[in-house]
Amino acid sequence: MNDNEAPIIVGLDIGTTKIAAIAGRKNEHGKLEILGFGRASSNGVEHGLVLNIDQSMKAILSALENCAKSNPDLEISEVYVGIAGHHIKSLQNRDHIVRHEPELEIQRFEIDQLISNQRKIFIPAGDQIIDVIPQDYYVDSNQNVKDPVGYNGVIVGANFHIITGDRNAIRNINRAVERSELKTKDLVLQPLASASAVMSEHDLEAGVAILDIGGGTSDLAVFSEGILKHTAVIPFGGGNITDDIKKGLGVLQSQAEAMKIQFGSALPDQAKANAFITIPGLRGMPTREISVKNLAAIINARMSEILDFVSYQLKQVGMDHHELNGGIILTGGGSQLKHLIQLTEYITGLNARVGLPNEHLAANHIDELKKPMYSTCIGLILKGYNDFENKHKEFNTTFAKVNVPVKLTKKMKAQDVPQPEPVSNPSPVPVKEPRRGIWDNFKNGLIDIFKEDTDQILR
Image (tube, rainbow, N blue to C red; front, side, top):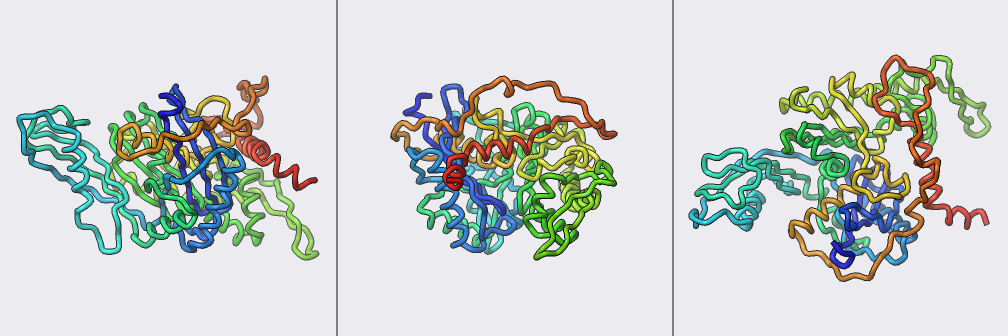
């Protein structure tokens, strides 16, 4: 694929805590080159819902402005937008069509018509269909057909997973995007976008559950036998944990967030009983000491509730250990919480790991872009390329040549080469994946991106 053939696709993640905009293009090796990256604090969004259109619009514009700073040559007009929130629902439907010319092989347009017909089914008033996802096809008596194009038969049908959302919630997202002078290319369910960024073909075959822990919601997508089996939205996320810390310990929101990131743990047993966090008092009040163990207990209570929801959802659709050999993949900003893997394995009984979008990124991108909090954005770009490669939508491929900006790449140094993990403070609970330096890399990535702005402020 040459540069003049590959479109630039932009993913826009409108989250409860952050707005992220990432522009990418596939290179000749099929890897994503990030051409622009910007983020901003989110306003007007609660639990994945755009409630204040004006505030959300300003936050989107701020993210786009930061994206423009990373690459002034980039022009953004169309975006793939992630959608989440507790209003999201899903239903199963089975349907078929009787072919007019059964003596001929099944053509792609007939499958497109079958899928299009699903958008006419009855759904509750006030809801709108977001996506129609075929699970498996059948042709006459042949079941479990992956792709019926080229088959002969009189009847072709499929089982469908249909995702719906509140019409007003969808309208608010579109309005916020349009008032930012952008066009929504497509709305994509966030857990599906995240799944495409962190899941491999082996995971899809083995069976896996993707848990995207965002700021306002935690989104679940379950795959088995190469098929999307179930989606669900859990109305709690990292923001709820921060609120719990704020109320439980009587601290400010910013202090609660900082303590969660720097000292938080999902397992109280792993926190030192004699360790304390000192925070400044308000308006001349004396400093306070917060127990690290109490902090972990608050985090554990909310994370256990989220994971109990996951276990319940898996039982509802009959997904046991034999169906999910790939276990649970944790992604999203909340997945970086210390000891979360161990807690997930304890509550669900499934193997767990943190999913990163590294596999799809070209080499030498800064570490910030490889964090799980950007899985949704990377997945939105991949969704756009899936549409492009399967000719689902029209794309503009006549644009000026845009290079990967220097500030989004890093030079390979000796310290970038992976080193053996040092052994320190062995834990009674085995750690399956090293997570050393996650927050160090997070801070270093931000310093690299915004270094010029900081220098200007210091001057």
